[in-house]
Length: 246
Image (cartoon, rainbow, N blue to C red; front, side, top):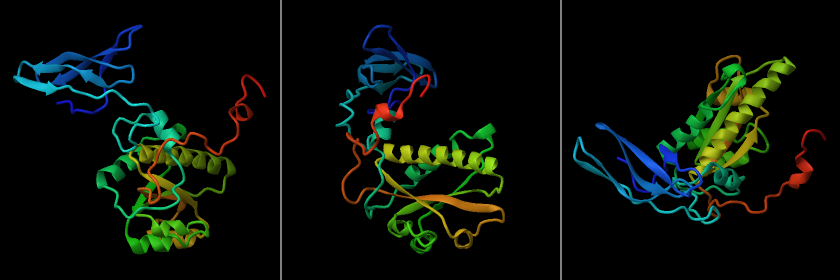
């Protein structure tokens, strides 16, 4: 059964047209129904699974503009999530649902890594005492004490500069994947470095050879809902982007 409001997943787009044909798979086979906008949301129609005599409701809404679409909607796209992610200034008190935390962690697990080595572990922390203790591993990590949850990014330590750079590049990809996944769910994030590795290892009971490298707090915004940032505090596009050569 395809739920109303869910994103389109399996479709054939019509060349040169602003609609696509949706296909839904049922136990008895595949059927085709309805039409979609180019943004991929069904706007009408229904399909019958003849083998089971069931009808799949297919009333979908048309996507609003990216700047107005609710951030906690399952209809958010990747570009909107990227534009929406920002450092959380204030954590709300609302706890984060288990399934949403699992989705964020799954985004990290699926991140790319050098030769697919996956040199990472993710430690989810929600216990208030644990969060308060973790907030002391670096002078800039005090905000972790106020977060409803935090994810510690654990990796092997290496004294080899090349390997250390490779590990940190992979960890950056995993962290960004999780932050984008969080923004997609209306959940804010705020990262923190680690300075006292021994204290962090004691708090998390880490095996020898592993180190808490980075961590970030998660929470629903306590000040204002997440929304696309129209004018981010970033260098101009032409100052950053070069083509073919400098």
